[in-house]
Image (cartoon, rainbow, N blue to C red; front, side, top):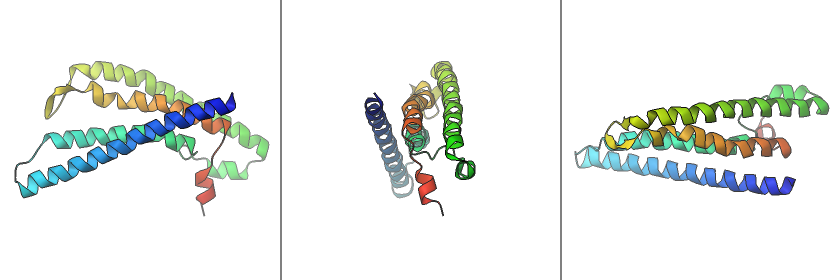
Length: 164
């Protein structure tokens, strides 16, 4: 069961990370397009600024699951290093429960906020609803749940290993 869940977690985290990388590529491409339009052709494309902003928001929220999985999201390094092994496991549980509580709040209020924002439109792109921009919060939070649980089951402390 543990290996099955960790396989599911790797799959969902990889999908979220691929989405985050795609959003980075979109924002970088739009930034280059904006520079070309504004400074070379002298015909600014205002809509690119809005799409860059929202693609960066999507990128951040889709990259959060990888940070949780690697144990780099909530850092309690000093407490962890000074604690005996038994207390370390309790600390892992406390951090995971706190993170899951936060994620639950983000999912609940994120969907609510996205639904309420569906009547708004993006400035510069009046044909697109703000729902799609606000949806980044609950979607990223949903993808974070397997990463948090996966880090509790099979801890990876990459920030502790690389710290000086």
